[in-house]
Image (cartoon, rainbow, N blue to C red; front, side):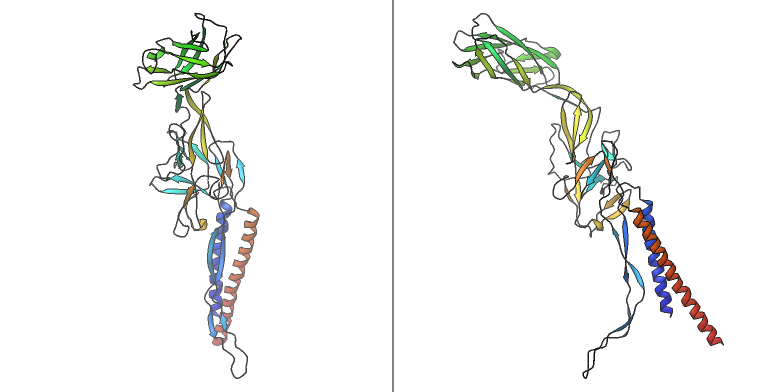
Length: 420
């Protein structure tokens, strides 16, 4: 009879743990990316009063006679189901659709893992967890905007998005021309056209080309001016003597070859800037000259104004000069057994020997989910289910307290009988 009381006590203890888990689930119904937990119970060791016996002398078998010794908490399992997505319209907020965890660096140099993508940009221009200030990790881009997603992610692999401070310019390396040169033009008549190019500092420089037909049929000479440009920049050729070249046409008026190149040399740089003039779109026909630059690949200095994040986690910066460039790419990690992760608070987790080692990669690859910018993952707590579980747990607790009180009454009756 005492065993029945202890069985009830074991159940009371187990249901208290169950209620604690339910209470924690309900308290986190609004916590970003929270994963609810569920309690599983298991039986305790049973006491064998009589063991099983094999049949003897043609008789039947005898089943074991056992009395259970109560219940216990078998496991508390994290429910990994995807939470719903809530739009926030904030470009720094991100949600993972599918498997994976964001990676952040803790102050002690460890890497933490989290589904909470409520991020912000700090005063240093780094992307950080808005709650803890921990830097978000990934694959930073080079100054040329190249991302190496095969690199190893370390606590120093911080993604920077310095809006308002990062600048970018590109020196002109190629100028493309298209149009016509009048085949009826004779020397010394010429045709001039100016083009704006950019030096290595992003300064706009104006170069004028003068095209003059040569004494050789189907050949035009070109020359560039002026000699001195703004900001101490000098226009030279690779030989350092002239700024000229030629264009050669076939009998159909199609450009077949050209010679010559330009160099800009700045007093602030010892390396000359080569500029190639491409005349592949030029013709020599009996119509008015309209040769003009069609494109050039340089651009002036621009300041980072904003950024976007795509489903692969690539962060692209948009500059005031109309250019865009990759700033980095977020890293995601997954585990063989996510349920084995150790919760450390602040919506963060740490790996354990049971979770396995992190498998790091980029979004939408190798089973990792896609990233949705401007959204946050909601808690996956089903409030209706939790309230129902709470009622069931309460009834279980009441029933087991009734077992304890009933056994107490029976023991009291037994004592009174002996005293009588």
